[in-house]
Length: 87
Image (cartoon, rainbow, N blue to C red; front, side):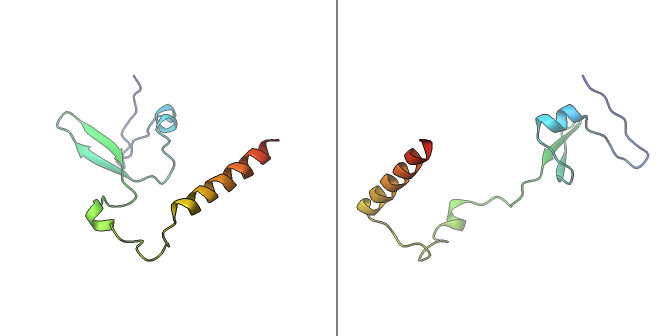
């Protein structure tokens, strides 16, 4: 178990092993949640949550639909490109 101290400015140092294992970098915003037994730190979501109804149709008319034949041709071309790059 790791321990840390609360500074006179109310700052707490999160031990490096925890920051590394959670990939927390400087500048990360954390939410502080009171659980009743202590405090929980969670990274703040970079974007507000959304549901499907909010975003459905947002790309409508921006991308032309492809036929099955066009999709197959693109996949075949990409597979050939990747395969040639291996040799």
